[in-house]
Length: 355
Ligand code: NAD
Image (cartoon, rainbow, N blue to C red):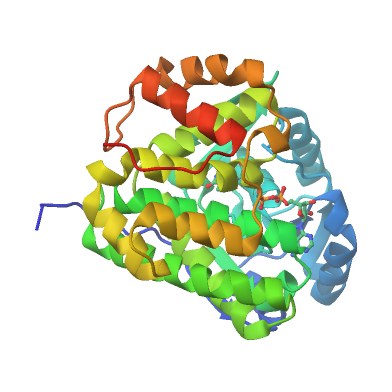
């Protein structure tokens, strides 16, 4: 076994169905009394219902969260924090709502309660990406890790099928890259394999019946583990590509992850044989790449960057951006091979492992 360093992340996790009823007690347990509730505009109705259950513990609501944590939204939310003299936040929703809670915590140290409703995993990571003047800057700091996470499977029942697939695949991508991370360790690798297996079984069952609670619970459990993977070890080529391509061409976050994942796996498979074998074990299949391709086809996932709106003329720019700054990856980052990967992903060609 290779030597390793393992850091566990301090967060309290409550998981189940109907667990939103625990929120009030959790806020009191933490000694807080004035919560500002956060969501996207689309989830404002649910947010208002949750606010109603908190009574005087709810100091206010802000339903303006947006993708990629724009600085102007954070400024408006901070204004609301001051107006209602909040002493904690409750982020309700996907990575956009969680991101806003993190941005507030970064500046105020307010305690965070997160109630995730997608599979993005941000609620258990010490990572924040913020956008100002079109540039997204990402940093890692324990200041942004939510203290309490309440996973309530019931809220995920409304996650539309396409978002279920792309958000679930976004989660799988965290676990895939954790398996071949430079700082991988046996505990996180166990979680990663278990997470990929849970999501690999759950997502097809959810597509067949979006109200299948058992499958929804498995998917949310898998997503939690994937989030822990993302928060605990470094990521590589896949996350780099999604970051630069998604940012440069304003592509939807989870869809971009879904398209790129099998191509990034094909790029790294031969250089990361243990990860490849773990993914094949978790999903069933001969190798990691074909297992991911088969899952995508069973789920009817988006399969090309072209279909997400990336222009063909952007392939070279994307390749330049992806190789601009050095970073660790199991297979060396070579511009020619990276360009070929992006061109194949743009067209939706079948991903094949590189030698
Ligand atoms: P999102 O939070 O933007 O949600 C997408 C849409 O789905 C929104 O309109 C939202 O209101 C809606 N929605 C969410 N849950 C729903 C539900 N259960 N039912 C119906 N509608 C629902 O999308 P996301 O993919 O969860 O998050 C993406 C953002 O999170 C990006 O900004 C990404 O960079 C960030 N992210 C950060 C980390 C991290 O560790 N910092 C990790 C993953 C993602």
